[in-house]
Image 1 (spheres, one colour):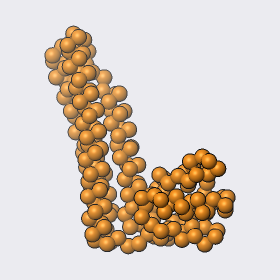
Image 2 (cartoon, helix red, strand yellow; image 1 turned 90 degrees about the vertical axis):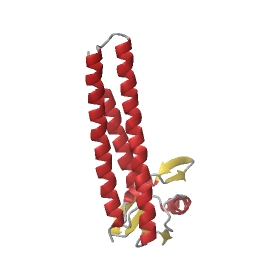
Image 3 (cartoon, helix red, strand yellow; image 1 turned 30 degrees about the vertical axis):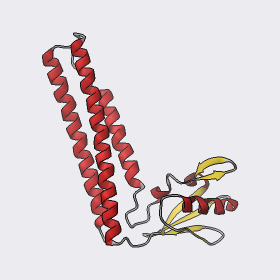
Image 4 (tube, one colour; image 1 turned 135 degrees about the vertical axis):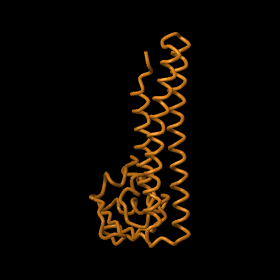
Length: 184
């Protein structure tokens, strides 16, 4: 009986999705509403994501407009954005908040590229940890006589092939994001 890799493939897919979500929060010179995904405000005593209490739209390639449904939350949204790690000062005109993304400097682009590389390495580590779990399970099954040595070798090869596939996917995603960052 070979090792069923479905569970491990599912976990690796979740790691890839988490990595993509993490990359969405890295701003690459263009306005991207996803940079606000981690910004929460204290709305009547409850931490609430900005996207749940306001309409977020793009005015142009470099400007995000946040129009809260409850105008009284404008100050709280502004305060939450200032406290976040977005690095952009919001402009509040009493009705909407505008976030204007400045053109990235060459130095900032290189910094962001390093950040993306590090996130990519972290994602690869997560994939390798899942591989280790799968290999451990395979060894345990062999030890408990649930599989033969040949079945273990086949299972280990399948797990390694799966790992290689996901590592390549991370490399492609990382390269695309780095290219996007370095575009002027």
